[in-house]
Image (cartoon, rainbow, N blue to C red; front, side, top):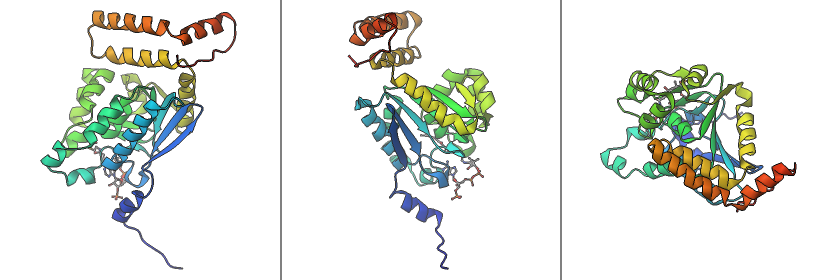
Length: 272
Ligand code: HXC
């Protein structure tokens, strides 16, 4: 029998031939699975560009109501690709295409649930925090270990972590680079739910399906408003919410939702 040994760099070349993000869709839920298992789903430029492109398409696709982003049992993502980063100089960073990819991921308008098992570190944790919420398995671990590499979070980590877990925990995590487990992440407010590893994806998809069957106009407005809450003063936020409420209330789907409730039937939403 002939045995063929494949080196890591050959795997890297081979993976370029495959999808770095696997796409599947059912029940108005698009599931995007990060697919660089040999590198713990480290987020290289090609993967990020593919992910951002898929989200841009999903934003325009009326058959997609919600998205689940996931990895595998060992890793959601262990961070930006350190091997790729090692060869980047200041000029590369200045024209880094990942900046636009991260912006597109962060600005995605439909609900996203991150289904997390295993390592969720650095850029991986930053990606999970771009989601509307995170469901994690008991063995998941979260952290911003960039400081240990002489760098810092660069895809929203310093801003989103502090908003989710508050200043004390965020400063501790970012300055020490220490990871926290799923139970700690739940009590810190980083994640919404902890469950058995085997059913994380199933749960996330079930919740995404539920969301995807609500009126898209209402769902989009809710997401838009709670995102505004992070940027606006309370009075401005309340005024913003009021305007959005009036817009949503003028939709056909609002009439459909209320009529369905009053007539004890399931609503049929038309995104109008
Ligand atoms: C590239 C990575 C990687 C990463 C793991 N690998 N993390 N490759 N970038 N971030 C690769 C390893 O090199 C190894 O490949 C393979 O995945 C398996 O990893 P091991 O280390 O052997 O696994 P294990 O012993 O289980 O340790 C798991 C780990 C460790 C604790 C998660 O891999 C680790 O500390 N990784 C780096 C985590 C990190 O520092 N993340 C932050 C990155 S900076 P080989 O080829 O050796 O088998 C960042 C900045 C974001 O994210 C800025 C955004 C703009």
